[in-house]
Image 1 (cartoon, rainbow, N blue to C red):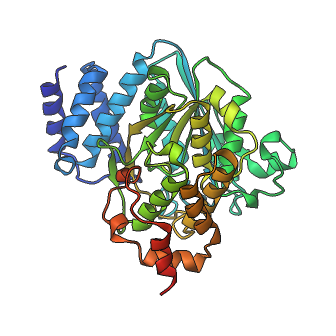
Image 2: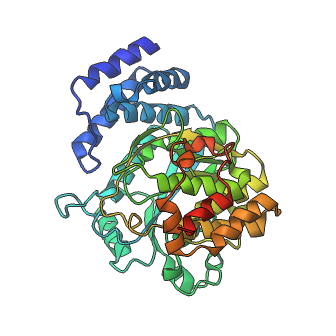
Image 3: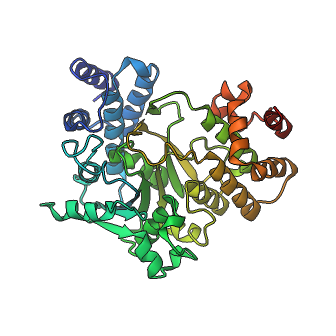
Length: 419
């Protein structure tokens, strides 16, 4: 099928589909999958789908979100199918106070039924390829609401067998598994400790020469059908890791709420101290993949078990082999309802963790030292003072510019603390 025929097919679908996409609406997700299947029925090449993706992204608002996501799903499945060797993917995600979102919408107003939906999405992606397999592990991050037990109840009711299970970080700590290090309680983790445990557990049962370990978020923000995009970055492009990015030209992002200039400040600051990763902009998208062998090399003795854990993984991967991380544009739909992180405001604690990474892994240099010293000295109140007075040179720039732009000095930021 040529590009023009593909475009006509998608545009015809756009006439009948809604403009938005409700992650909790099963009919909406079915429509997306059906369009992706319809596109794939024409047996398009990955190249033609890339061209279609590029064409549609020239005016992103001209097409409904469903159409953009369907194109990415079709591309992902095509790329996975074009890999000639066997592939196994282990998917890991952490759960903390997800006792509402794991329910169906009919059971709770915030219900996303995310466990069943993830399994369904993985079955769709891998189902046509006998030599492409997957498993899924949810890791209970010390949830006081027993998210892990609820997940086990859901899995027990499944009619079709799937390679899916629940792990508990607290049990791993009590068993003194090596990945838990000196941890005494799951309360020392905020997502990071559980993801590290889940990835480590996956390395204990490597099943293929091409065994990839993917971690994602508990919610439905990133459709699991996009995993083929990550696999392409690692297997076809020869990288050690691949990360979903919400800041590429072909990325499709639906973000609720106001523009997050605090996030811009965070990116500006971390790029001043961790310059090795300057070619990456979006370090925090919860959709990353690593070769299992790479995970085996970078998980030892982590500094961070909270929200900056993935930056440490990226940095250690980059130190293994420069420019070894592929970036792939993804469709990402915000799922802030019932989120456990929106009220935490972890930027300062993440920056302090990044300073510790700089001190351990990288050679000192005067400019990075100045920013690191400032960050180390800040209290939460002082951080908020800087946030309230973020320089327009940062607020009005795109984060992709911050690798080159360094016009805001430490002294300029300190001015916010004097008034």
